[in-house]
Image (cartoon, rainbow, N blue to C red; front, side):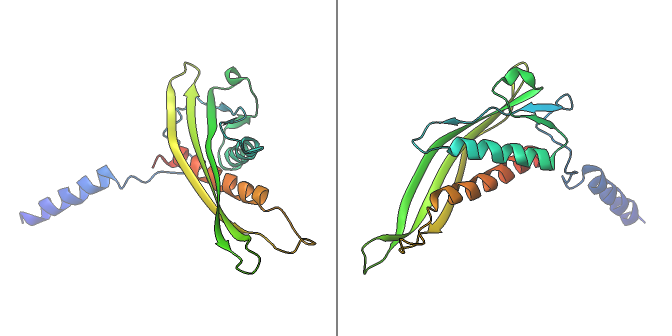
Length: 174
């Protein structure tokens, strides 16, 4: 008889505390007062060309498609309820494999480091991550007739991966 109330209270305690799961639209980092999000062009602290544009556009697309927020692509941060400031901090391309016959590199590893901060109208930090790091391997062709520069395509893929991770981090709070 003593075990039944103990078991019921144990189950009740587990139900009350929950598992930590929540719906996708419950953005813990962004308060309910945020309806518009200004996303100025990311700052580029590297020598890479247009990487900041790819990352900014990918973040805007991801927020637009996955959240109810109105996203403003503007360089006027005061135009939104919150502003997402991003920066490209590192950009590195390293050769991975070599063609022994030609002595040229045949595959590369591109690594991009970024940081993001979301601020409200009072400049309080709502979300911040200074350590985003993404890698992408790509191959090049040795045939000069059909040569296609693969760097921009790899940056596009990395920007999509970054945007998905960022929006997930902000929405799911993990």
